[in-house]
Length: 113
Length: 116
Image (cartoon, rainbow over all chains, first blue to last red; front, side):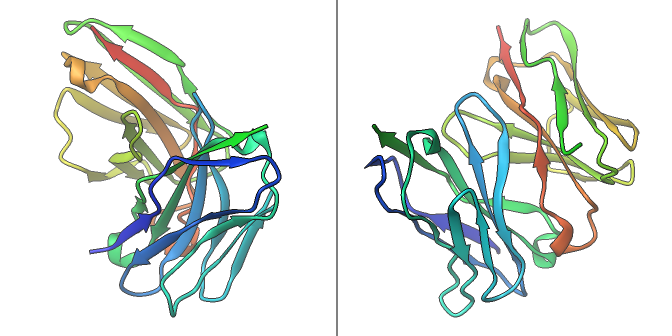
């Protein structure tokens, strides 16, 4: 079946550090890929998405590129801020999963001032 | 308006109570969802409504009863819950259910439910 694997957290970085959160997926067909962010005490917000191979999603300084050859969708940001502290979920949706959104386990990110 | 609004934000209920969670969206989305999220876990899908009809029930116990009165509203009726049902309940909507490219979901802030 379809699945998403993302790096275990928590991840702790200093402000202005470079961020990578790894995400790989298993899916038949051509899934759409997403990163969602959940700030403390809140619901999920769509951070960025990519719907086909080699697409790059970007938002708020975050980027992720849909790599079909490596089945990956790693999240990156060049310079993190304290306000980026949150839980990040990689997710996919595809016809083969009846269009359900399948989430990874989440990665908790903490940024030190 | 890109908001999904959930009420109440917090709810404490006894095991014999009946309560309802409410969700509203005005984005013209035709698919609406209920998810359950336990602490430090990803959301788990409970129900999907597509064009106001129940499309998916992920083997949820009958003490949870969803209702979709119209295309903008989604309710979750709760009765005889157990303490282990305490969680964050998230509502979401998406443009439709039929195409993978359209299934980015917009989430509400959630209702934090405590069953005592």
